[in-house]
Length: 136
Ligand code: CMP
Image 1: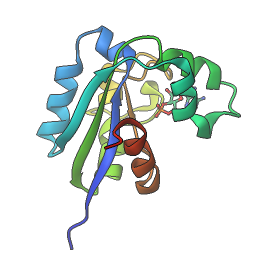
Image 2 (image 1 turned 120 degrees about the vertical axis):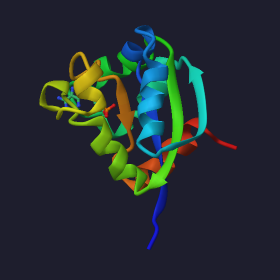
Image 3 (image 1 turned 135 degrees about the vertical axis):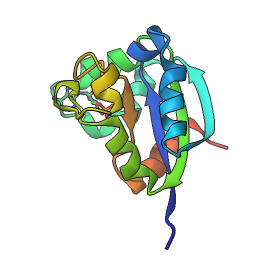
């Protein structure tokens, strides 16, 4: 049975700054993802704090929110069969040094903070994150 899902992807400031956003988009497309919506934006720190609210008790929360709001990002809605898991596999481990060959974070990630991409971690969060950036 088919299980087409949508997930939210963010190309983070470190990748936009290095002008590799198109390369990353091509990786998504060549792995069968459709980019249904996309926009390049810069968000306020207060918006990053809302977006990453699940991490608010973590020691890295403040730096994480400063970082996501530090420069332009590209937010996208990706669609594919089992998109949430497929995107997480394609991104690789959160820390690029633990990411497997062939993953986006292995190829482009600089550090656990500058790990080039974000992807929703569950179908439930994908819906919340898509609505966060793309309210119709
Ligand atoms: P992301 O998938 O965007 O979700 C939260 C982000 O927090 C994560 O990627 C990392 O870039 C960042 N982060 C920083 N430190 C940590 C940590 N110790 N564990 C998990 N995520 C971290």
